[in-house]
Amino acid sequence: MRPTAAACFILFGLLVPCAWADNLWTLTDAQFRSSAIQLDSIDAQGIHPGGNSAGAAAISWNNFLDLSRSGPAAVGPASRYDLFLSGGDRISGEPIGLTDDKLRWKSPILGELDLSSNRLVGIARGGAPLQGLEDSRSDDVVRLSNGDMTHGIVTQISAAGVTLQAADATPTLAWDAIGAVLFSTPGSPEANQRRAFRVRFSDETSITATQLSLSGGKLKLDLDSKTSRDVDLSAVTSIEQMNGPMSWLTQHRPVQNIYRPFFAENFPTRFDRSFDGTQTIHERFAQFHHGIGCHSYSKLVYDLDGTYAAFRTQFVVDSDSPLADVTVRVLLDEKAVVERKNAKAGRIEPPIVVPLGDGKKLALEVDYGENYATEGRFAWLDPALLRVMPRSAATEPAATSATQP
View 1 (cartoon, rainbow, N blue to C red):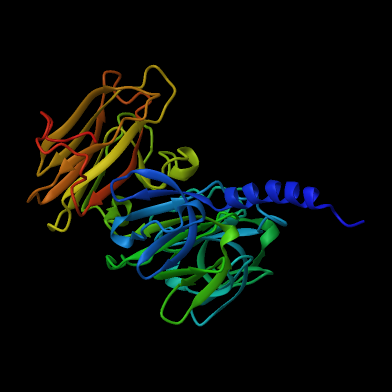
View 2 (cartoon, rainbow, N blue to C red):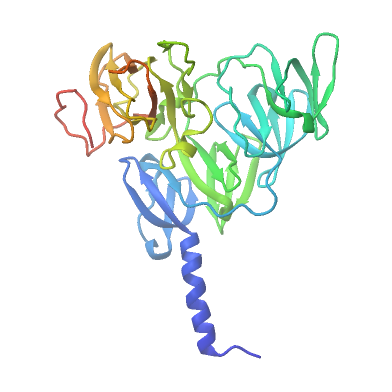
């Protein structure tokens, strides 16, 4: 039976809003303002709105922080493993083999990738948290499912398992017996200040691309000068610019990382993860992508080179205990320009913006509060170095020498 014109019209009316909703994104600009747009294309000039926003001016890369939307449900079986790379990338999938210091990894979305062994940080079962990523290691570590750990040098990774050279033995451990693999800590990479983009997908994969373009529903990612991938936009949940109008502080290595426990607690500072390392910042606080999890007393010190005009952050005492109490400070050249005494649990503080001027060192400090180190769990949220002072920030600094936009 042929559908009537009225039925077709009703069906069209039902389908179009769904398609429109699938292409509805939240765009955050360099002033940290958010707006809803439909996405038409991406090119060297920036983001081009479409749909009801068609004809609107492109959002240039100099005014773009990120695009995000509620992720579509993952399709098909869950990936067997997650591969963690230096720089924060994470790729779901499974290993194929290790040859000439390159790991070949198969991703359901990105296909097969050859990844340098000096970028490997860890492998865990799909969806399982991997603790200890930030810890320094002089050798490779295989954590077995029974809780034991084996140290050595990984010489092969394949679908069959992991071959580990330990003294004179070279056993191949089957994946069924492995809980996680942690690789030795590579040398400190050079700071990269070139523009890049971190793209996140519905299967929790996130990967950094040097360039992006979007046309006809296909997003092209240039992963390096020789490798590119075309993926369906429907699999993408967010696009974040790195080293654009701002630079996340978690991309910078502190010159000092001080942690001084009060008793026997042990919560070293963790970057882009919660204070105990069990969750990413985005998993713990959904509206934020980056952050620093720590515990009183902690202090991080960063060198400044005059590239950035301001520092911006939010923070939260990451506890639900009424005993939680810390003192929070942001210091510029060892002078406190922001101080919050008796910070309590349960409230994400509004943004603060600190003009950097000609300052040489920026420090973030979480000090003991009234109850000493009791529940001194803390997170700096989306800490960022800004190239330009936000227009919404007051021109006259407050008594703390910082402003709240």
